[in-house]
Length: 423
Image 1 (cartoon, helix red, strand yellow):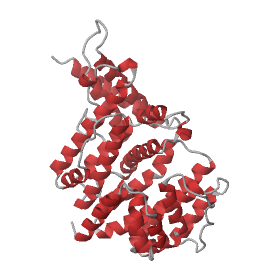
Image 2 (tube, rainbow, N blue to C red):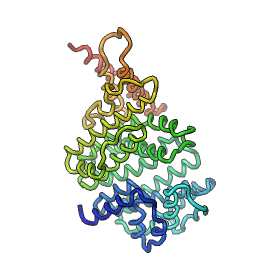
Image 3 (cartoon, one colour):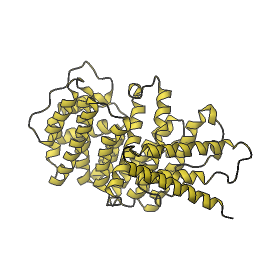
Image 4 (cartoon, helix red, strand yellow):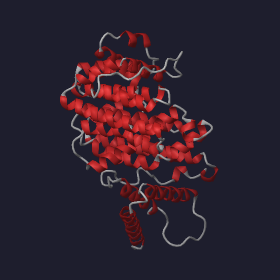
């Protein structure tokens, strides 16, 4: 990697766990200095990932990240009565649709969280963020402007009439993830599959954020344990989609730095979600693991295999906490490792169906003569959870899609039955 990239990465790692230096951010004398100082406080591990990128991508990704943080500020810190119009006004100013800055955020004595203090400062210096965007190439500006408009639109709609958490995640972080993948990767997926699978990654990332921020009110829960159970149970199908996406993106991303950025975010997010259920982290040295994964297709596949096995362990650790499924984790069937993600479908519903029946094929053949062992009961429970998840993905007003799902389930069941009857 070039020296400037190494310097950016070293600076980021040194400041990753430190409280933001608000005085230094306020004193930044140029948009470029503000961007350099704000990248890690605003993005944390995402800022580290940006630091892996080559220079021409790093500048664009930094501007996009900081612009989205400005939108976050107007979404979360505005008075609720004007928040929707404030987000829209901020987007219009950032993209140059208007030269009128949005109204200032309401003053407060102190923010509850460091992240909110950083977001507020970026909102106050929205003119500098607009200058960063103006300095991009015409193509880069077009890409980032499209993200800003789309993300602001979803935020405004959510303020006016709250969306489901999945719909919000797919519309905001999903749009950002789609932009990032399209920026660095070659055409390895259809546009429809790319949007669907980047939406899966977004749901995972948003869930991790919600757990960190203890979003009890959004989920209608009373404490962290209840929040953890609710959030973690919704992540199985998105995890399948996330691993399917990464299996294609790794070989389809020419830049080693971009591959390292993707690997780092995947490793750190997996590590956090594992820590929530007291499962071990996949790697102790996350930066080194990301760089190694980026070095070849073989190491990329080894990283994904390790992450799938770690995530499988986390699934069973979570189920161990339930008195109904307290035994059998060590013998339980792998879920995320049930098939080779490179040969599995990249459309989410077929991917879920194929994984469901891969689990079914691990169950004993023939009629039951007694109760199943705990591990096989757990496998059946997970297969049922996935099958219902596939149904939830199909809009009820699309009969053709429902018919296609029914046909796929029937064919998969017949295939499983045929394989089970072979000598």
